[in-house]
Image (cartoon, rainbow, N blue to C red; front, side, top):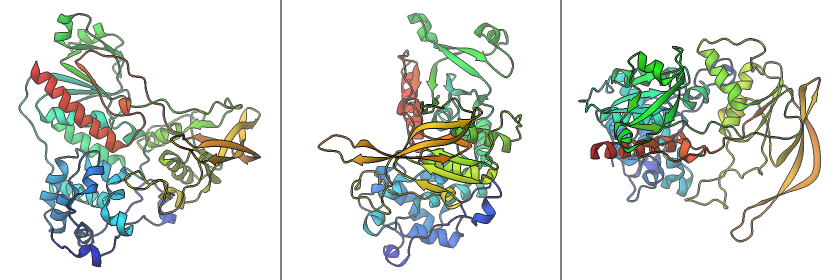
Length: 479
């Protein structure tokens, strides 16, 4: 611990965001950075607690006190080495993680000024790329092949970990490029896609093979002999136009692997099946977010397929991060107005006595997108969509009351009868995703990410990826 009293004299300093009037005109990252001196001062605030709650609360088990100390002392390479030992892609988590570590920081619990752990993490990995500390690694191969289905955070971690252990890894994904929701769900103004591309080039240089535009279905082994040879994949469709297993075999491409890891995520959005759902102008959040990221990447869409908020009154149903992303995107499109409604009551600011540590603090969160222009309302249930000539014109909402739980029960919702219509000619449903049902698979098939967690955090998906890679390695080593 370099400075044992820094936390007493140095206050938390966040890098902050670019000017609102500037950032809403583009899709560049809104978050700024501190200079090297200020960043080292922020790292000095870490108290190297005897029991580091930050480490305990991190799904990846990051060793924050160790790399904070190295950063404070200017040992950037050492800091990255420590950080990289537990986190495969700090450039992702350093930008989009909600930082459960900071919610458990002793300085958060004692004076509400936690160490800027997430920002420091991003600074370390960016310095590592800039200074050349990160270079391709080419491990000795062991001859065994593993297929990873799904190129999201969990799948990429599985691929990276197994590749480093010497396996031949092929990643399959139905999208045009790897990244999953990192690429197609999170706006560029939070995570620019050049950051993903930089890491994907590195993974490819290290020997990971990416098969994009490829949908596959799993064919479990039917007999013990087949199971020993591994599981087969049916290629449903690919960019090359193949439609069956035999056609891929005709090309001489491997279709049998020693192990397979399914990392296909939670892809089914939660719907709102109320009267009027058929009206035009009602979209799932990812209809807009994924399309906008593709447009930035150079794709074009016909007018009838375009999901654009320009000149429209937008209503976002759902108060989470995805809803926030819809707000920021709608503002950049040029929406006339943006309103966000949430069925739950408005949480308190700063501290919530109902969710004390170590629970996740349910408090009011104001994002950069909220700051850019949005009306926020709580305790509103949606009763029906209202339309004219087949197009949505508004949503009838009703104020609800939440009755506190008794005993071990849950809060109950009570309609109040206070109804109104919120005008909207575009409605975005941002109410999360459904947890997939996972069938039984043979022992050579593994799972990771939101497929098993349900909709969750990127950092948690990455943690399950590391766990799956360890289990696959143990399984194949035993063979």
